[in-house]
Image (cartoon, rainbow, N blue to C red; front, side, top):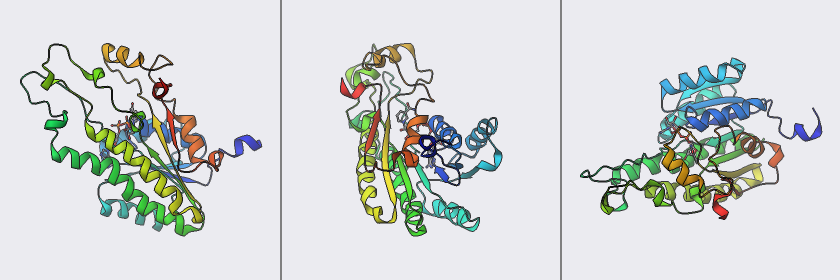
Length: 279
Ligand SMILES: NC(=O)c1ccc[n+]([C@@H]2O[C@H](COP(=O)([O-])OP(=O)(O)OC[C@H]3O[C@@H](n4cnc5c(N)ncnc54)[C@H](O)[C@@H]3O)[C@@H](O)[C@H]2O)c1
């Protein structure tokens, strides 16, 4: 392997991904497997994990992949997986905090529009913060501490969103024919969680720095996943590159951020959004 590629080499490294059975979780796994990592795929959904495992098996050595049901909102659930891995002498070198609840924006006349700030249910606020932000804190607490203790260091990658750096453009979600108070919006939780992850990243970037633990954020722009034409057209008009991302377009960023290729990058938010945030 040449010197350039060796920086991306993750053979003998183990990467744990949260929310790993979702659209991007599987892609992060593909990216890290391609660099030789052993991947510990975790998710709250056993069925989706099974499905993700089947997909990954098509092109990868089964010995490189393990799956575990893990709820990032539960310290007990995270500790159980950590203990299991410790007992098998598996040290997590890379943690990808990816789990989140993507609140679906609906919009119906005559039905209280709960995505709107005025109506947003406290239970939804608590649940979404618990998964997207507290979950990243708890996983960093458990796996980051182990990285620091190991003497080998490690990498924490928090997955935020381009909405970590700007406000949602609520015009994207408008539905014709609905009254103002029934217009759906991107909920406040998304912005709060993604901005919060940047703060968490900066904190983590310095906290265990003497023990060799680095932390960065990746803020992806929207991935095309069959969204309706009207939404896609409105969104792509806001993106200088004129399109949404393909689901595999973050592979190289994940490989860079999780490997020694980014050894001197710490505490940063890499916004990969087709240029949307600079327009
Ligand atoms: N897809 C996009 O366009 C996009 C754009 C920017 C940022 N992101 C971010 O990327 C990350 C992944 O997004 P995605 O599109 O793959 O979402 P997704 O909904 O497909 O996947 C999220 C996964 O998290 C899991 N999950 C939910 N609650 C959990 C819990 N308590 N514990 C563990 N796992 C739990 C779900 O089961 C699901 O598999 C998210 O942080 C999202 O905000 C996505």
